[in-house]
Structures are given as C-alpha cells and as structure tokens.
Amino acid sequence: MKLGEIRRAGARGDEIDIGPLIDIIFILLIFFMVSTTFVRNLEVDIERPSAGSAALADARAIRVAIDQGGSVYLEGQPIQPWMVQSRVRDLLAADRRRPVLITADQRLETGRLIDVVDQCRLAGAKHVAVDAELEPRP
Image (cartoon, rainbow, N blue to C red; front, top):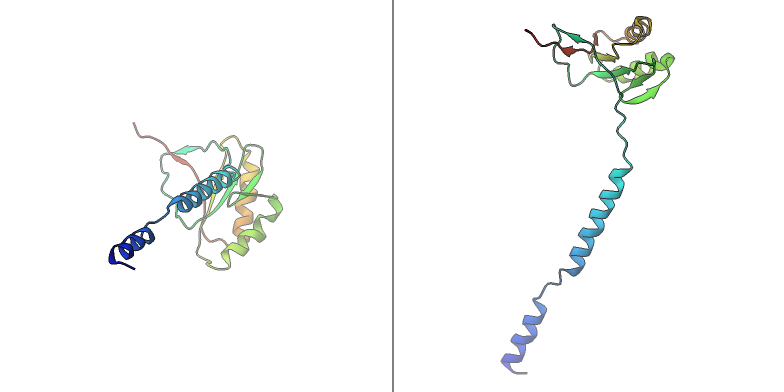
C-alpha cells in the first residue's frame, strides 16, 4: 500500500452520516407532537369573585375548586364532595402546615362552599382560604 492510498481510505472513514440522526430526531418530534395532543388540561371553568383585600396564595397550597354546578375538584381531579376530608387529610400527612386554597365560582350557593371549607378543616387543615381576584383600586 502506498501512502496516498492510506490517506484516501482514512478520509472516507472520517465522514459522519447524519441521515440516521435526522431520522431519529424526526421520529422523536413526531412522538412528542402526537403525545401532547392526548394530554388534557383539567382546568375548571370558574368565575372567581373579586375582593379588594386579595393577596397572593402560597404555591404549596392544596387546591380545591368548586364550579358553578357544585362539582368539586382536588388538585385538578374531579372527586365526590364526601371524599374531600379524607383526600385532604392524605395530602396533609406529609406537611401539616400546608394551606388549603378553595377556588369557588361566584355563582355557587354558599352552602356548598361552607361544606367544603368545613371538610377541609375537619381533615386537619389549619389555614383554609377562599380564592378571589384582586379588585382594581380606583
């Protein structure tokens, strides 16, 4: 073998074929595009009341939502109203000082809100707050 032949053979071996890399990237892109279409956002459509004394909520708060129809959601998951106490108690087991934030629709009857607040307190929550939007000051 001559010196020139060795260099040419080595030059061919230094080439990187990026075709398979591009194929893998496209497959991953398609996978993530398809998988994100199946993820549903479980946001509850709630019209919150406004208050001039509203303040920012603790980010660690256990979030309970009640929509206009009286359906209850805990951390975005629908639950039966009679299950609120046991589920909140389970969430408080790790940290007893964790606050509970109840977001209720302003058209909701007060009795349902009071029931949920009572269930949270019976579960052992020391700090239970009702969510409201900050009312703009004139």
